[in-house]
Image (cartoon, rainbow, N blue to C red; front, side, top):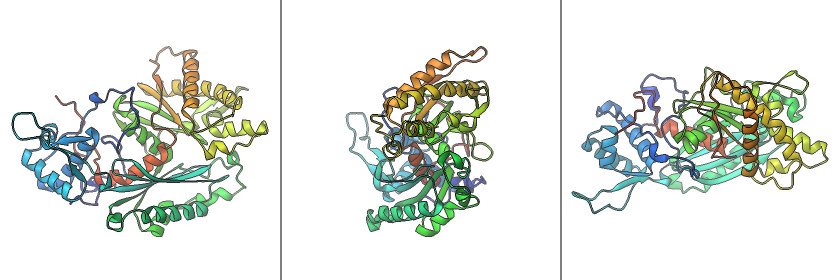
Amino acid sequence: MISNEPIRERMGRAENRLNWEISDLGESVPTNELQLENVIDPSGGSNQSRVRAYNERLVLSLVRRHGSLPKSEIARRTGLSAQTVSVIMRALEAEGLLLRGEPTRGRVGQPSIPMSLNPDGAYSIGLKIGRRSADLVLVDFLGNERNFVRKTYPYPLPGAILEFAVEAVEGFVDQIAIRKRNRIAGIGISMPFGLWNWPEKVDAPTGSMDAWRGLDIGGELSDAVGLPVLVQNDATCACGAELVFGRGAQYSDFVYFFIAAFAGGGIVLNHAVYPGRTGNAGALGTMPVWGENGSPQQLIDHASIHELEKILLESGRDPSPIWLQPDHWDDFEPAIDKWINDAAPHLAFAIASACSVIDFEAAVIDGAFPESVKDRLIQATRSRLECLDLQGIDPPEVVKGLVGSSARSLGAAGLPLFSRFLLDQNVLFKEQELA
């Protein structure tokens, strides 16, 4: 049996330090631009019985990354003995976490039997709390979306969001067969740290957002639904989802921008999300930029969907569809063009600033908007970056994120899966390229 206790606790690490660096959460989004054959595998298993749970997580992580693998290949890639791998895989199959595939014949020796993750082996729920909307998603062990609901609002209030989340979670649970409900690993919450900041930008009444100060939203939700809850910064969750499902197989280091109601971001170093001292590293929305009048401002003042909302309101348009349908912004020109022209130079400035501190391979831009808008924003940012004086640094590739508007909720849903089933790679080994 895999222990419910995270392996990092048994190794004396802090309970809440989550790490995204080694494993996939499920089937990836389209990756036509990636070279997946170059993905580095986790390795370094141990045959000692005291780390059996670690080896189980290692096997699950390896199978997840490759989709399916036979026992012989797992033994080769991990260094575990064939007998140890057989014991582990039989146990995981008995628990319903692995599925046995059809034997592969045609080679010398016994037929090879590939093993893959069982989609119904585990479930997880992700709650994204934003400044204009909240999303709740149910995913299976492969990260496939099984259910999704959204709530929009003018500004977030904890009571209304908790009520929405409890009702939606109960609805999700009711749709899972009773015998499988114990396979729900938990709930992950992604939300901005300091959600009460900048209330004037979302037109919240004075003091209304103060209810978030000191609130243990994870504890409140856990008490209400009886499931374990983990909380992480929303942009960090989105960055982790991009690392796992998107650009993580292509770049070992990148700065990540996620444009939602406010701009935010994350940092990936050496194939791992870097959370920072307080878990808020990559708070790119607060990065200083220059306003039109030469006064210092923040990136959120230009590269945020809130700014597009303002443009629409000023032109007498109803901005609600940009929150209700983030993947379908029809008939919003010329407001979108105006917004892109304002956001792009400030994004370029922020990219150059970030790369003067860390030599990033790439700057990844994603957000809660349609693919066509993303493509235009990225092209405009590339053009603006070329206009900057970049002497002394190597400019990064500016590329689009592959996960899209669901990155924050998908990343949140991944938190319980990592905590219960997958590896914290820094505990026992470093990634190394296998022959």
